[in-house]
Figure: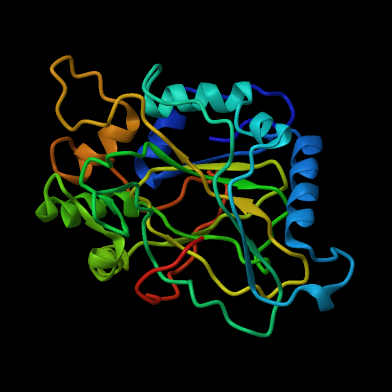
Length: 296
C-alpha cells in the first residue's frame, strides 16, 4: 500500500503487510523529500564527470558509482516513514540503521545494449577464501533490497523489472545449498526457471519514491529506451538479528514469514501472483528469461 506523498504517514495495516507477503515488494511514494532526492542526483552527476545537459558525454549505458555517504544520502535512508516500514517488515530492533546508500547503477540512453540484464536475486555475504558473494535459504546478511529513485522513472527509462510474487519461488531453490549457501551465479538459472511464470512489474515512479523488496524477489535490469538518465540506489537493509525460519516465540517478521511460506512451513497467500492495484508498478506479461545474472 502506498503512502500519501509528502505527508510522511504510512498506512501500516494488515493490507500493507499482506501486499508485501503476496507480491514481494511495496512502493512508498514520497518516502524521500523531493529536495533531498534532487540533492542526491546532483551529487551523483558530479561523480560521473558527465554533463547532464549534453548527452554526447554519456559514453556508456551504465555508469557505476560506489558508496555515497554525504548528508543527503544519509537523510534519504533515515526518514521516519522508512524507519516505520523497516520495523514493520523486518521487525523492530532487528535491523541496522544505514548512513550511506551502497552502489548506484546509473543508466543512460545509449546505442549499446547493457550486458547485465539477467534475472537474479541479490547476494549478501562473503565466505573466507571466496571472491563471490553468497546467499542461503534464510537470507543470511540481508533483510530487504531497497530501490531508491533519485530521478523520475517511466516505462522507457530502464525501470527495474520485477517478477511479482517470485520471492516465494526462491527458498526451495536455495535449500539444497545448506547453511553455506551458494553464489548467485551457481543458482541463477534455477531461480530464473522457477520464477518464469510470474507476471512482470516495473519499478517506475517519481524521484523520492522507494521500493522495499523481499531479499528473494527476482528482478532484472533492462536497456534504456528513453531520453532521461535513470539514477537509482539499491542498498540492502542489514540485520541486527539474522532472519530465522524457526522461532520459539513465533514472532516472525513479514520477511521471515514469506520465506516460511516459500518453504511450505506456512500457507501461502490465497492469491500470490497479481500485483496489488496500489503497489506501484503495474503487472504485465513476462517478456521471458534473460541472461544468467545482472543488476537492477
